[in-house]
Amino acid sequence: MFETLERLPADPILGLSAACAADPNPDKIDLTVGVYKDESGQTPVFNAIQRAQEALTEREVTKAYLPQVGDGNYITGIRELLLGAGHAALAAERVSSVQAPGGCGALRIGAEVIKAANPQAKVWLSQPTWPNHIPLIGSVGLEFKEYRYYDAANHAVDFEGMLEDLAAAQAGDVLLLHGCCHNPCGADLSPEQWQALATLAADKGLLPFIDTAYQGMGVGLEEDAFGIRHFADALPEVLVAASNSKNMGLYRERTGAIVFTGRDRDAAEVFSSQATKAARRIYSMPPAHGAILAGMVLSDSALNGSWREELAAMCERINAVRAMLADKLGAATGEDFSFIRRESGMFSFLGLSPEQVDRLREEFSVYMVGSSRVNVAGVNSGNVDYLASAVAAVL
Ligand SMILES: Cc1ncc(COP(=O)(O)O)c(C=O)c1O
Image 1 (cartoon, rainbow, N blue to C red):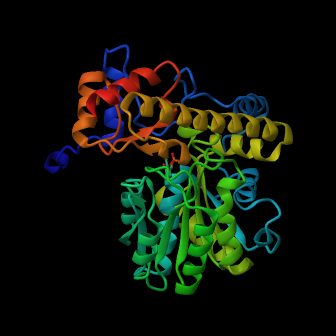
Image 2: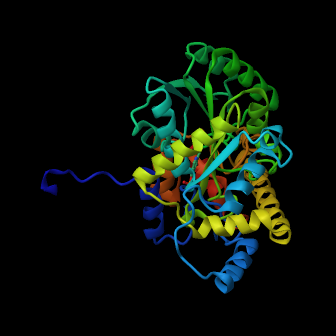
């Protein structure tokens, strides 16, 4: 049967990372895939997760399925993490959360429920956006529109262009936003811009769908949730796809949730029933291990305190690397890379041409995505000078 099928190309980012792993050059630098790396180049297991795992091994007596909505501690904890424990929507019991296999699973389940509610909805995507948004959301049959977002010349959000483009959005359309640490550009919305967008979404009757995969890695756990919390204050309905892959280091455990703030308790329950039904027809039951660990970290005060400290240290390192990279690139090239300091999270566009990116890879074994998006967490004090001189050589 399958002889009629063609071989598909490898995922461009994962393919580059594999090519870097196979490169014998001892000076090689992998700035491709968006996983956090520490100063020694490792992607560590959080201590809090390690401790939760040890406790779980001691006490786990079954591998029977979780409830369809997921682990109780996790789905309660994640909505409090996103909205803040005292949020009025939580007190009004108009929030529901359904566990999903990572942020990707949450995006897909969210898209399934949107499609069921309004098959005509257009999903407005930032230009550029994370490329995986297209297959994850498009595969349910929803169509896309784009809004301008990143101004490459100024390395900043093109907010005027964004508003101009969104003027064409229709009631019932979906406004997909990055909660923080925009992937791929690192340029985030200011609180004032979030407020203006909430007004626009309310006036036009748009459904905000906020993808948040890096809470706590931009400025801090609370600050990075500003947009979500403000939207949940200002609008009757908000949909959030949350991932704990990065901020708990649970990547391979596929830990995420789709969280819905509705008009009332009944609306929240309807959403939950639709989301679990969508999950049932795709993968049936949620994966347990990562969500149980995340639930322990969110509900146990000692583990929670330890996790928050580790995450804050991670965030601090990312921002220190940003400052170091901006300075070293500036000094080596004589050009202005100060925008790297102003951005948030792990990603930045260096502003190089595809030819320059190719030369970096071929001549210096420095690997980055063709758009010159780099994962700044792949930079450390041991490789930054080599990286800066390689960039200077190709500029
Ligand atoms: C913007 C964005 N959304 C969602 C995700 C989802 O990640 P995961 O499915 O691994 O939790 C990622 C991961 O790279 C991302 O960058």
